[in-house]
Image (cartoon, rainbow, N blue to C red; front, side, top):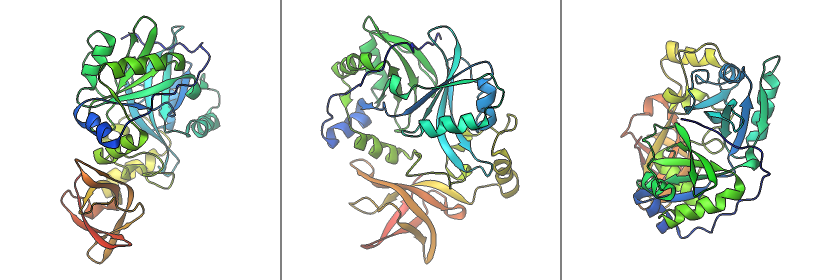
Length: 347
């Protein structure tokens, strides 16, 4: 797959059309195709022959082995394997033919991540660029996301594995990079393009059936899917092995990297992390309070980090519990101001 991104155009503000009501947006995300503005995601570009090895030495996944058109999820940790940054890395080719790494992180974390990388740069041939404001980004998600994308493009789209990516043109001029990514528990595509082209791409997708949707709907679907996000669900105090889905974000076969020793010790000595990230369903018409303590009988064993109420999932929440209470089907109580609320681990 030939990947390229033009970095020469001046940035422009992308303002999508207003979203509608939650029920309509949620239905689109679960039965059709919903379209979200994700332009606030932090975006860095790394070039230079040492970029793959440099990132690999600082993050948990095997960046050096990424093929052109490939990508992965990864974490940047400190020496104790505490999660400093949650990130996604894509091997791209720029408009001038250079191989490069596109590094996405959570909104507002691009500048701190750039500073973190610069701290460890000694003599490696690597150049950084913060391109957060130079590109718009959308997320198209739902069972009909691929069908909608193909209709807007006027051509078929290959069946991409998660984090694989390619480039296509909407209309005559709007060249975009799109990546398969499923944070909402349904097929999804991140679509990245120049801001001045984004309005037209957004309109084409909407004309083909995508329903514009709000950040609140994205958040509800994310929680229901059990996807952690930096900020509410993890921060620099959280051991990366507790976060969940480490099987796809942590490589145990590559060389040394910052935070490797505690990660390997957790796997080889204890066999597990002290706590586990879980998805819960509560017997409540209201979302569980963020920060609510979780109890197994009289024992406090965890806490809630994110919560929502949806038509399909009811009162859904994410949080951490002690390792021995992590099994699906475990019954717990959440301590709220209204009293104990029964809940159950469902993932």
